[in-house]
Length: 301
Image 1 (cartoon, helix red, strand yellow):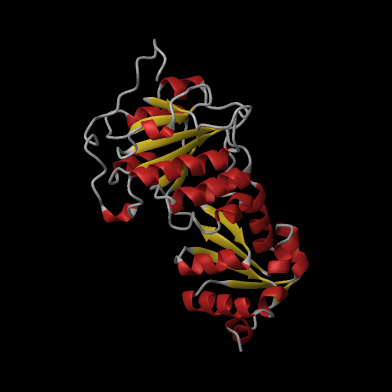
Image 2 (image 1 turned 90 degrees about the vertical axis):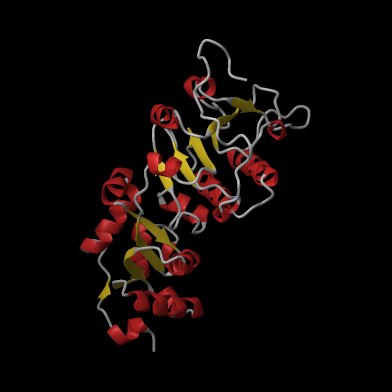
């Protein structure tokens, strides 16, 4: 008998139930997610990842599809052991929150960790990835997943980016943002916060010719990515110490932003010997240099 059956909570079949309305509002309203520091994560794989990473959970909405599956029983036991409040709902109720969720039978209201940019940059300096103008949630989530897998210590969503805590981005990240620094900031605040730190700022810029392999990525680095169509704005390009272009075959001028992120992150990891970023290894002989923005009167190279 599962923990859910033991507790035998009442079945909710109303889409106007207060908890259901709250979950639906979180799904649709980025400002509410920011204010409440909560977000929606749905699906069995994400539920298992959340339990494995000990992500803080406010509530779980559970449907029939979960109760009838083996994975579902594991998830229910995990939620019960954590003392997460459960709400038993119908498939129709889950579908009213997020289309497709009913087939998975599980929707979590997760609690965000509070991170800010100065604290992220004050940590042992390694690698921070920042994106500007990336509007597709799937790309944002995939970038977060690759960034964590390839050793970045955090991700910053700048102006024009989709919300990393929207459910489509959360699903694409496949659990990578649970307990990992993911935050939003303005480009101006990023540039200001970088002053005097050991980080150097490297921008992906298809208009340049310098390949990533020519940059010393063993130094503490903030790596900047822009949207495929527009690229990075002028202030971030001129504020960058280096601008790099991924070499491509003749006739090709751009890559999907997640593909570009993965290539650049892999180059950083390669130069660092694929070291575990938590090992505290030496970031390189030039790490002590303090970053200052280039002279805005000349092009950054």
